[in-house]
Image 1 (tube, rainbow over the protein chains, first blue to last red):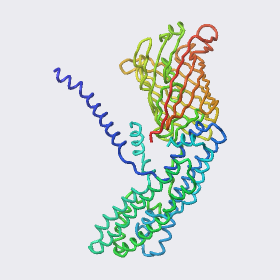
Image 2: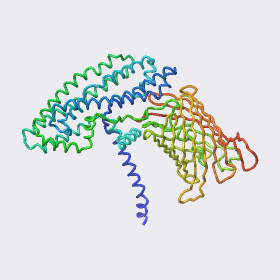
Image 3: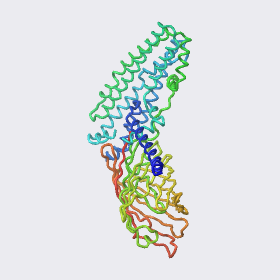
Image 4: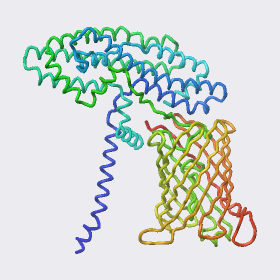
Length: 155
Length: 416
């Protein structure tokens, strides 16, 4: 009777412990699992937004801080442009190939050129990248080495 | 580690990780599917071997493309982290890409021709059908149509530094270790039996109020917890370390909160549901609405909450329902230093007459960047029962003797 009581008492406790352990293991596996590399646009956005929110705490001069913040936010819109440019490049590449293979079904991933163009799209995002470089160089002119290092530590 | 795991799990379950990822993994799945379909649909051994060789070229091309991207991203990241970087550093990143991409394209066009020669049109149609049935094939549709919705977030995911500029909820993947007063989750957390704020606090009640409420005249508390921005405008968290240090040490009820915010141009609306684990008056529930107007220097936040304590299933009580409408104005003297004034109206027990009160409080804080983390060091002084405009007996009175002092620090960091 006592043993039966003990089992009854331990039952729910043990099962909730198991659930907790399972949850912990699951979270551990998730944390350690390799994540797919992010797109360049996502990476640039993450770096810029990590700095945009705290730039006023690093740069005491309000005018400089305001311009720097505007620069970092411009990187976000630039990243959207990069995404668009990537997709447009693929479409243009696929469309350019179509006349060369008139018998190919537009749904055929290889003959339509969609696969090849997705793997190696032409570089049409140079303008956006050049603008990114210009913005980053302008940011340096507004920052001292110490301020730059502090912001760089954010991400 | 826990926060990284939690943020990763949420990103994984919500599909955010795959939306943010480059297309390499999807393309690899498509090529693998093409390979399988080709093996099944092309019976002729010689033609099949040629087709598979062409697919191997596609695979090698994909590997080369992904390597190019990794190198390019690393190069840009290196230039970004160098103070002395010049235009040439950025040009050096994209320079090699042009020739590499051109040669990759040429090899893929050759592979495409080889594949088309080796596989008949009927076989290609069947292969295409098998591949296009996969969800990953949407990528090819967007490649053809030139349309893709940018998966970039609508809200910045960086830490919000200046206190007056902060929104009602934390940005996604930002974690806050709450161990100080004046934070967003404890704004208006005034239950009928206790007022909750983070950090270390000392509350002094006048003997009269102590006798009336049954709360000890001198109360020492230590409350800490965490909050996390789970989605762009949704935050959840708990003050899971709620200790009463004096006059008697015990573990207070845990406060759990969920806030959903809607951002408008210039203001935010938030809906918060807070719960308190059972205390002497049972479960506490505190649903409410908040309106916040953030600004560069000045922020105003108001809320309307209906806190109630409803007993438990075993210990039934008549629900104690109150209403609380806090107001907080925050003024950033400097981006890193702020002052705040708090007031509003509170009616802790609607069933009792004369409980209508106006609190008055002041706060200050300093925001400090430490590496990639932000620390807010805050302190507050509040008369929680400052003005009684219509007490049950007598005329309006001001109570200076009941006050609360709280101080502490809260830490903010990006989990991912």
